[in-house]
Length: 159
Image (cartoon, rainbow, N blue to C red; front, top):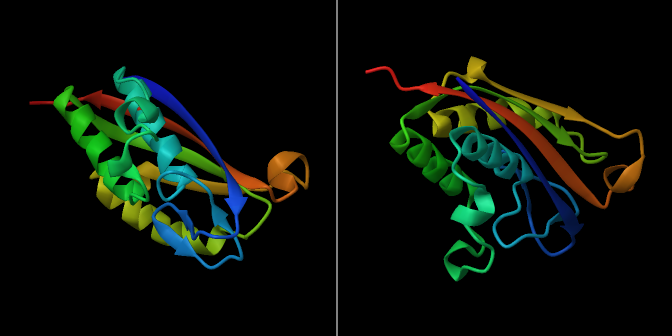
């Protein structure tokens, strides 16, 4: 077994969509990024890549590469799954936390779990997504952006 941790943060911007866990969420601001800005998926990708010893998301999908401009982060997650499988690993479980003062995210978590579990080829029970606020403290509390943490456990593929 191997464990990895991922963290990502993006600032709010008025001219883009808010996409978290592959789910488009109605909000007056989205997250500014080279891709779709999905901090949850980015943190999960980093956790998985770290667990497998495969660098990080920026190494595989640099924000200087035009091919990744505006890309759906679910595509990146599926590529990460392919990379860890090629390295001889599969996902055992993922635990993650979204940090946002607004919008309220709990209603969207079931759909996020369904989509991301499918992308990672795991049961929904092996993926946990939580959402919390910072009680109005820090950049998230001031509604300047959203952060995400993820921890992933991977295991050797059994032949």
